[in-house]
Length: 293
Image (cartoon, rainbow, N blue to C red; front, top):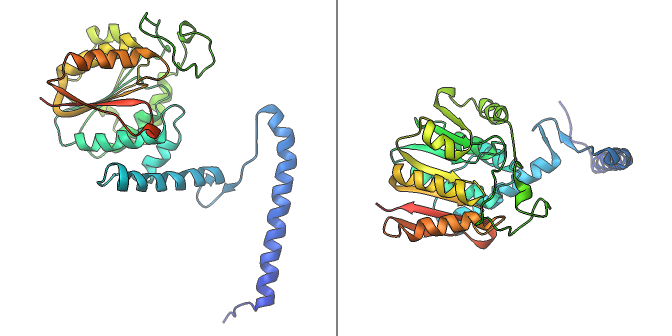
């Protein structure tokens, strides 16, 4: 039968652990002083959780953020699990607040008829998040992207935020290009049914006229950056969105003025059919349209 260590033994054990951790951190700093010159860095890894220390802290922070949004923003249950938060933590371009809004409005749409659409999928992180949230439904997910980067900007695409330091809006043509296989790989890791995935490659002005498209949509996320693809996506969705369904448009009054211009034109001509909302200022630059009738 074992016995508990006495106070002196416990203090010695704690001191030894502290010394070992101190040596470990000192060695890490020495190694990193060389590795960072080549773009690498050692990080603490938890073999039990399979996460780095930073990933664990980020997941904890997202869990706390979800609770805050649940209590003070939506004032209703915000249905997310740990996998949802993990997927959201991988996003390079979509903020955490934006992701929580996406999940909240997506779940409000799931009782409606129709599929889920994303216009502008980039590296597929939000695609994976949306797919995870509808995995246990019968809905399909439709993913539209050129997979060739951004198109030629129009005269309405005035540069607002040069986040890539490209110097001009025209220089962004062809940027933000990610391969289709990256998106498919992310979805396969989720074990999302492949027969419910519809990927539509190509620039939207062509795919809207040549591809098989969803007949009914209950929720859509539009992240097309520029005026022309955004207005084309909105005009199409206007023909298929179920009453009560939502469209969330990213980059409203951010990066290019084009997305805001497209949304404002669309909404001003259809005020009798849509309501428009905006998130908390700290949650991101996007707009929420709800189909009324």
